[in-house]
Length: 490
Image (cartoon, rainbow, N blue to C red):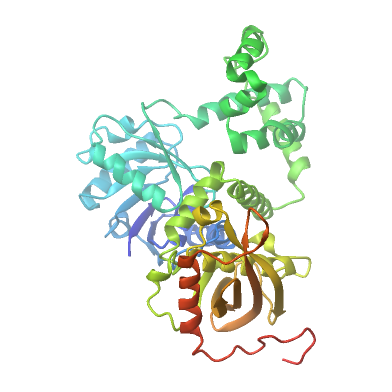
Protein backbone atom coordinates (compact mmCIF):
# COMPACT_ATOMS: atom_id res chain seq x y z
CA UNK A 1 0.00 0.00 0.00
CA UNK A 2 1.07 3.57 -0.68
CA UNK A 3 1.23 5.76 2.40
CA UNK A 4 0.51 9.48 2.84
CA UNK A 5 1.09 11.52 5.99
CA UNK A 6 -1.22 14.43 6.81
CA UNK A 7 0.26 17.08 9.09
CA UNK A 8 -2.64 19.21 10.30
CA UNK A 9 -6.16 17.77 10.27
CA UNK A 10 -8.45 20.77 9.82
CA UNK A 11 -10.89 21.23 6.95
CA UNK A 12 -8.14 21.09 4.30
CA UNK A 13 -6.05 18.40 5.98
CA UNK A 14 -9.17 16.31 6.51
CA UNK A 15 -10.06 16.72 2.83
CA UNK A 16 -6.57 15.54 1.83
CA UNK A 17 -6.90 12.55 4.17
CA UNK A 18 -10.22 11.61 2.54
CA UNK A 19 -8.88 12.06 -1.01
CA UNK A 20 -5.88 9.80 -0.39
CA UNK A 21 -7.80 7.26 1.70
CA UNK A 22 -10.63 6.76 -0.80
CA UNK A 23 -8.09 6.36 -3.58
CA UNK A 24 -6.48 3.39 -1.86
CA UNK A 25 -3.68 5.03 0.14
CA UNK A 26 -2.97 4.36 3.79
CA UNK A 27 -3.17 7.68 5.65
CA UNK A 28 -1.29 8.62 8.84
CA UNK A 29 -2.42 11.81 10.58
CA UNK A 30 -0.73 14.11 13.08
CA UNK A 31 -2.70 16.93 14.67
CA UNK A 32 -2.39 18.00 18.32
CA UNK A 33 -6.06 19.05 18.37
CA UNK A 34 -7.89 16.55 20.63
CA UNK A 35 -10.91 16.92 18.31
CA UNK A 36 -8.94 16.03 15.17
CA UNK A 37 -10.20 12.48 14.92
CA UNK A 38 -13.83 13.59 15.19
CA UNK A 39 -13.38 16.42 12.69
CA UNK A 40 -11.63 14.25 10.12
CA UNK A 41 -14.27 11.58 10.66
CA UNK A 42 -17.00 14.06 9.71
CA UNK A 43 -15.13 15.19 6.59
CA UNK A 44 -14.52 11.56 5.67
CA UNK A 45 -18.21 10.77 6.11
CA UNK A 46 -19.11 13.44 3.55
CA UNK A 47 -16.39 12.19 1.19
CA UNK A 48 -17.55 8.57 1.40
CA UNK A 49 -21.03 9.77 0.52
CA UNK A 50 -20.10 11.80 -2.55
CA UNK A 51 -16.73 10.94 -4.13
CA UNK A 52 -17.38 7.26 -5.05
CA UNK A 53 -20.45 8.25 -7.07
CA UNK A 54 -18.64 10.94 -9.04
CA UNK A 55 -17.16 8.48 -11.51
CA UNK A 56 -18.49 5.47 -13.41
CA UNK A 57 -15.91 2.98 -12.15
CA UNK A 58 -15.48 1.69 -8.61
CA UNK A 59 -12.80 3.29 -6.47
CA UNK A 60 -10.03 1.02 -5.15
CA UNK A 61 -10.32 -0.56 -1.73
CA UNK A 62 -10.13 2.10 0.97
CA UNK A 63 -6.80 2.45 2.76
CA UNK A 64 -6.22 2.42 6.52
CA UNK A 65 -6.54 5.63 8.56
CA UNK A 66 -4.41 6.01 11.70
CA UNK A 67 -3.73 8.89 14.10
CA UNK A 68 -0.32 9.50 15.68
CA UNK A 69 0.99 11.45 18.64
CA UNK A 70 4.09 12.84 16.91
CA UNK A 71 5.19 14.00 13.48
CA UNK A 72 7.96 11.38 13.56
CA UNK A 73 5.39 8.58 13.92
CA UNK A 74 3.04 10.02 11.32
CA UNK A 75 5.62 10.30 8.52
CA UNK A 76 7.01 6.79 8.98
CA UNK A 77 6.93 5.05 5.59
CA UNK A 78 5.17 7.98 3.88
CA UNK A 79 5.83 8.59 0.18
CA UNK A 80 3.87 11.87 0.29
CA UNK A 81 3.62 14.27 3.23
CA UNK A 82 0.96 16.99 3.08
CA UNK A 83 1.39 19.93 5.45
CA UNK A 84 -1.85 21.77 6.20
CA UNK A 85 -1.05 23.68 9.40
CA UNK A 86 -2.32 27.27 9.98
CA UNK A 87 -1.02 30.04 7.71
CA UNK A 88 1.83 31.23 9.91
CA UNK A 89 5.26 31.12 8.34
CA UNK A 90 7.07 30.60 11.65
CA UNK A 91 4.85 27.60 12.44
CA UNK A 92 5.30 26.12 8.98
CA UNK A 93 9.09 26.50 9.12
CA UNK A 94 9.12 24.82 12.52
CA UNK A 95 7.14 21.91 11.04
CA UNK A 96 9.53 21.64 8.07
CA UNK A 97 12.52 21.55 10.39
CA UNK A 98 10.99 18.54 12.12
CA UNK A 99 9.97 16.91 8.84
CA UNK A 100 13.57 17.22 7.65
CA UNK A 101 14.66 15.08 10.59
CA UNK A 102 12.13 12.28 10.21
CA UNK A 103 10.90 11.97 6.59
CA UNK A 104 12.28 9.37 4.24
CA UNK A 105 14.90 10.89 1.95
CA UNK A 106 12.77 10.33 -1.15
CA UNK A 107 9.46 11.47 0.40
CA UNK A 108 7.76 14.41 -1.31
CA UNK A 109 6.46 17.18 0.94
CA UNK A 110 3.57 19.30 -0.26
CA UNK A 111 2.18 22.39 1.44
CA UNK A 112 -1.49 23.39 1.28
CA UNK A 113 -0.52 27.04 1.74
CA UNK A 114 -2.59 29.53 -0.22
CA UNK A 115 -0.27 32.47 0.35
CA UNK A 116 3.34 31.54 0.99
CA UNK A 117 5.80 30.88 -1.81
CA UNK A 118 7.75 27.60 -1.89
CA UNK A 119 11.06 29.46 -1.53
CA UNK A 120 9.87 30.68 1.89
CA UNK A 121 9.16 27.11 2.96
CA UNK A 122 12.42 25.76 1.53
CA UNK A 123 14.63 28.39 3.19
CA UNK A 124 17.29 26.79 5.38
CA UNK A 125 16.11 23.26 4.73
CA UNK A 126 18.53 20.51 3.77
CA UNK A 127 15.71 18.67 1.96
CA UNK A 128 14.51 21.77 0.10
CA UNK A 129 14.50 19.93 -3.23
CA UNK A 130 11.64 17.70 -1.98
CA UNK A 131 9.42 20.59 -0.79
CA UNK A 132 6.73 21.99 -3.10
CA UNK A 133 3.49 23.90 -2.75
CA UNK A 134 0.47 21.70 -3.49
CA UNK A 135 -2.40 24.12 -2.96
CA UNK A 136 -5.89 22.49 -3.11
CA UNK A 137 -9.43 23.83 -3.10
CA UNK A 138 -12.21 22.94 -0.67
CA UNK A 139 -13.64 20.32 -0.67
CA UNK A 140 -10.33 18.64 -1.47
CA UNK A 141 -12.01 15.24 -1.87
CA UNK A 142 -14.12 16.53 -4.80
CA UNK A 143 -12.47 19.54 -6.46
CA UNK A 144 -9.59 18.35 -8.63
CA UNK A 145 -7.38 21.45 -8.96
CA UNK A 146 -3.96 21.47 -7.29
CA UNK A 147 -1.67 24.45 -7.83
CA UNK A 148 1.75 22.80 -7.91
CA UNK A 149 4.50 25.38 -7.33
CA UNK A 150 8.22 24.75 -7.07
CA UNK A 151 11.46 26.68 -7.41
CA UNK A 152 14.78 26.25 -9.19
CA UNK A 153 15.93 23.87 -6.42
CA UNK A 154 13.24 21.30 -7.30
CA UNK A 155 14.63 18.83 -9.85
CA UNK A 156 12.52 17.94 -12.88
CA UNK A 157 11.98 14.42 -11.56
CA UNK A 158 10.52 15.77 -8.29
CA UNK A 159 7.92 17.84 -10.14
CA UNK A 160 7.18 14.88 -12.42
CA UNK A 161 6.73 12.56 -9.45
CA UNK A 162 4.48 15.10 -7.72
CA UNK A 163 2.33 15.34 -10.86
CA UNK A 164 2.13 11.56 -11.04
CA UNK A 165 0.94 11.20 -7.44
CA UNK A 166 -1.57 14.06 -7.71
CA UNK A 167 -2.96 12.68 -10.98
CA UNK A 168 -3.13 9.21 -9.47
CA UNK A 169 -5.65 10.35 -6.86
CA UNK A 170 -7.89 11.93 -9.50
CA UNK A 171 -6.67 15.51 -9.27
CA UNK A 172 -5.27 17.99 -11.79
CA UNK A 173 -1.76 19.33 -11.08
CA UNK A 174 -1.56 22.86 -12.51
CA UNK A 175 2.18 23.50 -12.59
CA UNK A 176 2.68 27.21 -11.83
CA UNK A 177 5.73 28.22 -13.86
CA UNK A 178 6.97 30.96 -11.52
CA UNK A 179 6.31 31.38 -7.83
CA UNK A 180 4.14 34.35 -6.96
CA UNK A 181 2.24 35.46 -3.87
CA UNK A 182 -1.15 33.63 -3.66
CA UNK A 183 -0.29 31.54 -6.74
CA UNK A 184 -2.93 31.85 -9.54
CA UNK A 185 -6.51 31.08 -8.49
CA UNK A 186 -6.51 32.95 -5.19
CA UNK A 187 -5.40 36.11 -6.95
CA UNK A 188 -8.67 35.99 -8.93
CA UNK A 189 -10.64 35.21 -5.81
CA UNK A 190 -9.01 38.08 -3.95
CA UNK A 191 -10.05 40.50 -6.69
CA UNK A 192 -13.66 39.29 -6.60
CA UNK A 193 -13.64 39.32 -2.77
CA UNK A 194 -12.46 42.95 -2.62
CA UNK A 195 -15.17 44.06 -5.04
CA UNK A 196 -17.79 42.13 -3.05
CA UNK A 197 -16.73 43.82 0.20
CA UNK A 198 -17.07 47.24 -1.38
CA UNK A 199 -20.53 46.41 -2.81
CA UNK A 200 -21.76 45.35 0.64
CA UNK A 201 -20.08 48.26 2.45
CA UNK A 202 -21.49 50.83 0.03
CA UNK A 203 -25.00 49.36 0.35
CA UNK A 204 -25.22 48.41 -3.31
CA UNK A 205 -25.86 44.70 -2.77
CA UNK A 206 -26.32 42.21 0.06
CA UNK A 207 -24.25 39.05 0.49
CA UNK A 208 -27.12 36.98 -0.93
CA UNK A 209 -27.54 39.25 -3.97
CA UNK A 210 -23.83 39.03 -4.73
CA UNK A 211 -23.91 35.24 -4.40
CA UNK A 212 -26.95 35.12 -6.70
CA UNK A 213 -25.11 37.19 -9.31
CA UNK A 214 -22.37 34.56 -9.32
CA UNK A 215 -24.36 31.33 -9.09
CA UNK A 216 -27.10 32.32 -11.54
CA UNK A 217 -24.74 33.95 -14.03
CA UNK A 218 -21.06 33.82 -14.78
CA UNK A 219 -20.25 31.24 -12.09
CA UNK A 220 -21.96 28.47 -14.07
CA UNK A 221 -20.12 29.48 -17.23
CA UNK A 222 -16.78 29.65 -15.46
CA UNK A 223 -17.32 26.19 -13.96
CA UNK A 224 -17.17 24.55 -17.37
CA UNK A 225 -15.31 26.99 -19.61
CA UNK A 226 -13.11 29.15 -17.42
CA UNK A 227 -12.51 32.81 -18.17
CA UNK A 228 -10.89 33.12 -21.59
CA UNK A 229 -12.95 30.45 -23.33
CA UNK A 230 -16.13 32.06 -21.95
CA UNK A 231 -15.11 35.39 -23.46
CA UNK A 232 -14.08 33.75 -26.72
CA UNK A 233 -17.66 32.48 -27.10
CA UNK A 234 -18.97 35.92 -26.11
CA UNK A 235 -17.11 37.34 -29.11
CA UNK A 236 -19.41 35.41 -31.44
CA UNK A 237 -18.15 34.11 -34.77
CA UNK A 238 -15.37 36.70 -34.79
CA UNK A 239 -13.99 35.16 -31.60
CA UNK A 240 -11.62 36.63 -29.04
CA UNK A 241 -10.32 39.50 -31.19
CA UNK A 242 -13.83 40.84 -31.56
CA UNK A 243 -14.49 40.50 -27.83
CA UNK A 244 -11.27 42.32 -26.97
CA UNK A 245 -12.00 45.11 -29.45
CA UNK A 246 -15.55 45.53 -28.15
CA UNK A 247 -14.96 45.32 -24.42
CA UNK A 248 -11.27 46.18 -24.07
CA UNK A 249 -11.92 49.93 -23.78
CA UNK A 250 -14.06 49.24 -20.68
CA UNK A 251 -10.86 48.35 -18.84
CA UNK A 252 -10.06 52.06 -18.62
CA UNK A 253 -13.42 52.86 -16.99
CA UNK A 254 -13.24 53.52 -13.24
CA UNK A 255 -15.52 50.60 -12.35
CA UNK A 256 -13.48 48.56 -9.92
CA UNK A 257 -11.73 49.30 -6.64
CA UNK A 258 -9.14 46.56 -6.94
CA UNK A 259 -6.34 48.72 -5.59
CA UNK A 260 -8.41 49.93 -2.65
CA UNK A 261 -9.41 47.85 0.35
CA UNK A 262 -12.41 48.85 2.47
CA UNK A 263 -11.51 49.53 6.07
CA UNK A 264 -12.04 46.29 7.93
CA UNK A 265 -14.07 47.72 10.80
CA UNK A 266 -16.22 45.88 13.34
CA UNK A 267 -19.25 47.47 11.69
CA UNK A 268 -18.36 45.98 8.29
CA UNK A 269 -17.69 42.55 9.82
CA UNK A 270 -21.02 42.61 11.68
CA UNK A 271 -22.88 43.79 8.57
CA UNK A 272 -21.54 40.95 6.45
CA UNK A 273 -21.93 38.35 9.21
CA UNK A 274 -25.55 39.35 9.88
CA UNK A 275 -26.44 39.23 6.17
CA UNK A 276 -24.72 35.86 5.83
CA UNK A 277 -26.64 34.47 8.83
CA UNK A 278 -29.92 35.69 7.32
CA UNK A 279 -28.98 34.17 3.97
CA UNK A 280 -27.86 30.70 5.10
CA UNK A 281 -28.39 30.42 8.83
CA UNK A 282 -31.32 28.01 8.45
CA UNK A 283 -28.79 25.31 7.48
CA UNK A 284 -26.02 23.86 9.61
CA UNK A 285 -22.50 23.85 8.17
CA UNK A 286 -22.70 20.07 7.66
CA UNK A 287 -26.00 20.48 5.75
CA UNK A 288 -24.44 23.17 3.57
CA UNK A 289 -21.46 20.90 2.90
CA UNK A 290 -23.72 18.07 1.76
CA UNK A 291 -25.79 20.38 -0.46
CA UNK A 292 -22.55 21.76 -1.94
CA UNK A 293 -21.20 18.25 -2.55
CA UNK A 294 -24.43 17.08 -4.21
CA UNK A 295 -24.37 20.07 -6.56
CA UNK A 296 -20.67 19.65 -7.39
CA UNK A 297 -21.08 15.96 -8.19
CA UNK A 298 -24.12 16.71 -10.36
CA UNK A 299 -22.35 19.44 -12.34
CA UNK A 300 -19.17 17.44 -12.83
CA UNK A 301 -21.12 14.35 -13.88
CA UNK A 302 -23.04 16.47 -16.40
CA UNK A 303 -19.74 17.73 -17.82
CA UNK A 304 -18.38 14.17 -18.06
CA UNK A 305 -21.18 13.35 -20.53
CA UNK A 306 -19.65 15.95 -22.88
CA UNK A 307 -16.10 14.97 -21.93
CA UNK A 308 -15.55 18.56 -20.81
CA UNK A 309 -13.74 20.41 -18.04
CA UNK A 310 -13.66 18.63 -14.70
CA UNK A 311 -15.87 15.92 -16.23
CA UNK A 312 -13.22 15.12 -18.83
CA UNK A 313 -10.67 14.78 -16.05
CA UNK A 314 -12.97 12.31 -14.27
CA UNK A 315 -13.36 10.30 -17.49
CA UNK A 316 -9.58 9.92 -17.72
CA UNK A 317 -9.50 8.76 -14.10
CA UNK A 318 -12.32 6.25 -14.73
CA UNK A 319 -10.45 4.82 -17.73
CA UNK A 320 -7.27 4.44 -15.69
CA UNK A 321 -9.19 2.55 -12.98
CA UNK A 322 -10.99 0.07 -15.23
CA UNK A 323 -8.36 -2.65 -15.06
CA UNK A 324 -7.99 -2.29 -11.31
CA UNK A 325 -11.77 -2.60 -11.00
CA UNK A 326 -11.77 -5.81 -13.07
CA UNK A 327 -13.31 -4.24 -16.19
CA UNK A 328 -11.70 -5.49 -19.39
CA UNK A 329 -11.78 -4.11 -22.93
CA UNK A 330 -11.23 -7.20 -25.11
CA UNK A 331 -12.31 -10.82 -24.98
CA UNK A 332 -8.69 -11.99 -25.14
CA UNK A 333 -8.11 -10.41 -21.70
CA UNK A 334 -10.71 -12.67 -20.04
CA UNK A 335 -8.96 -15.40 -18.06
CA UNK A 336 -11.91 -17.81 -17.70
CA UNK A 337 -14.52 -17.62 -20.45
CA UNK A 338 -16.74 -20.17 -18.73
CA UNK A 339 -17.93 -17.69 -16.08
CA UNK A 340 -20.28 -14.70 -16.46
CA UNK A 341 -18.29 -11.60 -17.36
CA UNK A 342 -17.91 -8.60 -15.02
CA UNK A 343 -19.37 -5.75 -17.07
CA UNK A 344 -20.03 -3.08 -14.40
CA UNK A 345 -18.28 -2.20 -11.14
CA UNK A 346 -19.23 1.16 -9.69
CA UNK A 347 -20.81 3.05 -6.81
CA UNK A 348 -24.40 4.27 -7.06
CA UNK A 349 -24.20 8.09 -7.33
CA UNK A 350 -26.35 10.50 -5.37
CA UNK A 351 -28.52 11.48 -8.34
CA UNK A 352 -29.58 7.89 -9.07
CA UNK A 353 -32.06 7.76 -6.19
CA UNK A 354 -35.73 8.75 -6.20
CA UNK A 355 -38.32 10.04 -3.73
CA UNK A 356 -38.37 6.63 -2.00
CA UNK A 357 -34.67 6.86 -1.28
CA UNK A 358 -33.60 3.99 -3.51
CA UNK A 359 -32.39 3.68 -7.09
CA UNK A 360 -34.98 4.89 -9.54
CA UNK A 361 -36.29 2.53 -12.25
CA UNK A 362 -34.58 4.25 -15.15
CA UNK A 363 -31.18 3.83 -13.49
CA UNK A 364 -31.47 0.05 -13.44
CA UNK A 365 -31.82 0.24 -17.21
CA UNK A 366 -28.93 2.73 -17.31
CA UNK A 367 -26.70 0.34 -15.36
CA UNK A 368 -27.64 -2.64 -17.53
CA UNK A 369 -27.15 -0.52 -20.67
CA UNK A 370 -23.62 0.26 -19.49
CA UNK A 371 -23.07 -3.47 -19.00
CA UNK A 372 -24.30 -4.17 -22.54
CA UNK A 373 -21.92 -1.51 -23.84
CA UNK A 374 -19.05 -3.20 -22.00
CA UNK A 375 -19.99 -6.58 -23.52
CA UNK A 376 -20.10 -4.99 -26.97
CA UNK A 377 -16.62 -3.53 -26.37
CA UNK A 378 -15.31 -6.97 -25.37
CA UNK A 379 -16.41 -8.54 -28.65
CA UNK A 380 -14.97 -5.76 -30.80
CA UNK A 381 -18.09 -3.62 -31.28
CA UNK A 382 -16.18 -0.55 -30.13
CA UNK A 383 -16.31 3.13 -31.12
CA UNK A 384 -14.20 2.53 -34.23
CA UNK A 385 -16.44 -0.33 -35.33
CA UNK A 386 -19.60 1.71 -34.76
CA UNK A 387 -18.08 4.61 -36.72
CA UNK A 388 -17.55 2.18 -39.62
CA UNK A 389 -21.31 1.56 -39.80
CA UNK A 390 -22.30 -1.37 -37.57
CA UNK A 391 -23.80 -1.63 -34.11
CA UNK A 392 -26.31 -3.52 -31.95
CA UNK A 393 -29.77 -2.12 -31.21
CA UNK A 394 -31.87 -3.30 -28.25
CA UNK A 395 -35.09 -4.97 -29.41
CA UNK A 396 -36.52 -6.15 -26.08
CA UNK A 397 -35.77 -5.68 -22.38
CA UNK A 398 -37.10 -7.29 -19.20
CA UNK A 399 -35.86 -6.06 -15.81
CA UNK A 400 -36.71 -7.64 -12.46
CA UNK A 401 -36.30 -5.48 -9.33
CA UNK A 402 -35.42 -7.91 -6.55
CA UNK A 403 -33.95 -5.85 -3.71
CA UNK A 404 -33.41 -2.19 -2.86
CA UNK A 405 -30.35 -0.27 -4.05
CA UNK A 406 -29.30 2.96 -2.32
CA UNK A 407 -26.84 5.77 -3.10
CA UNK A 408 -23.35 4.76 -2.02
CA UNK A 409 -23.90 1.04 -2.62
CA UNK A 410 -21.11 -0.65 -4.53
CA UNK A 411 -22.75 -2.61 -7.35
CA UNK A 412 -21.38 -5.14 -9.81
CA UNK A 413 -23.05 -6.60 -12.88
CA UNK A 414 -22.06 -9.95 -14.35
CA UNK A 415 -23.26 -10.89 -17.82
CA UNK A 416 -24.04 -14.24 -19.38
CA UNK A 417 -24.39 -14.59 -23.16
CA UNK A 418 -27.45 -16.74 -23.79
CA UNK A 419 -27.34 -16.54 -27.57
CA UNK A 420 -24.75 -15.10 -29.91
CA UNK A 421 -25.15 -16.11 -33.52
CA UNK A 422 -25.98 -14.30 -36.73
CA UNK A 423 -27.75 -10.99 -36.12
CA UNK A 424 -28.93 -11.82 -32.57
CA UNK A 425 -27.34 -11.17 -29.19
CA UNK A 426 -29.28 -12.39 -26.14
CA UNK A 427 -27.83 -11.24 -22.81
CA UNK A 428 -28.60 -11.95 -19.16
CA UNK A 429 -27.35 -9.42 -16.59
CA UNK A 430 -27.32 -9.94 -12.81
CA UNK A 431 -26.71 -6.98 -10.48
CA UNK A 432 -25.20 -7.62 -7.05
CA UNK A 433 -24.00 -5.77 -3.99
CA UNK A 434 -21.55 -8.31 -2.61
CA UNK A 435 -23.55 -11.58 -2.55
CA UNK A 436 -26.94 -9.83 -2.47
CA UNK A 437 -28.84 -10.11 -5.77
CA UNK A 438 -30.43 -6.75 -6.55
CA UNK A 439 -31.88 -7.07 -10.04
CA UNK A 440 -31.71 -9.00 -13.29
CA UNK A 441 -31.92 -7.71 -16.83
CA UNK A 442 -32.67 -9.74 -19.93
CA UNK A 443 -31.95 -8.10 -23.27
CA UNK A 444 -32.36 -9.13 -26.90
CA UNK A 445 -30.32 -7.09 -29.37
CA UNK A 446 -30.06 -7.13 -33.14
CA UNK A 447 -27.04 -6.15 -35.19
CA UNK A 448 -27.88 -3.20 -37.45
CA UNK A 449 -26.33 -1.61 -40.52
CA UNK A 450 -26.28 2.04 -39.52
CA UNK A 451 -26.50 3.21 -43.12
CA UNK A 452 -29.78 1.38 -43.83
CA UNK A 453 -30.98 1.25 -40.18
CA UNK A 454 -31.97 -2.38 -40.80
CA UNK A 455 -30.76 -5.60 -39.23
CA UNK A 456 -27.67 -7.07 -40.86
CA UNK A 457 -24.98 -9.66 -39.99
CA UNK A 458 -22.07 -8.34 -37.92
CA UNK A 459 -18.48 -8.35 -39.12
CA UNK A 460 -16.79 -11.74 -38.92
CA UNK A 461 -14.48 -10.83 -36.01
CA UNK A 462 -17.38 -9.48 -33.94
CA UNK A 463 -19.58 -12.52 -34.55
CA UNK A 464 -16.66 -14.89 -33.87
CA UNK A 465 -15.99 -13.25 -30.50
CA UNK A 466 -19.67 -13.32 -29.55
CA UNK A 467 -20.02 -16.98 -30.56
CA UNK A 468 -16.90 -17.77 -28.51
CA UNK A 469 -18.50 -16.29 -25.40
CA UNK A 470 -21.91 -17.85 -26.06
CA UNK A 471 -20.33 -21.28 -26.53
CA UNK A 472 -18.37 -21.00 -23.28
CA UNK A 473 -21.47 -19.79 -21.39
CA UNK A 474 -23.68 -22.58 -22.79
CA UNK A 475 -22.37 -24.90 -20.05
CA UNK A 476 -23.72 -22.57 -17.34
CA UNK A 477 -27.09 -23.35 -15.75
CA UNK A 478 -30.03 -21.47 -17.26
CA UNK A 479 -30.56 -18.35 -15.11
CA UNK A 480 -33.53 -18.35 -12.78
CA UNK A 481 -36.10 -16.11 -14.43
CA UNK A 482 -34.81 -16.42 -18.00
CA UNK A 483 -37.67 -15.75 -20.42
CA UNK A 484 -40.13 -15.21 -17.59
CA UNK A 485 -43.16 -13.08 -18.36
CA UNK A 486 -44.14 -10.09 -16.26
CA UNK A 487 -46.13 -11.17 -13.22
CA UNK A 488 -44.97 -14.79 -13.33
CA UNK A 489 -44.01 -16.19 -9.88
CA UNK A 490 -40.33 -16.04 -9.02
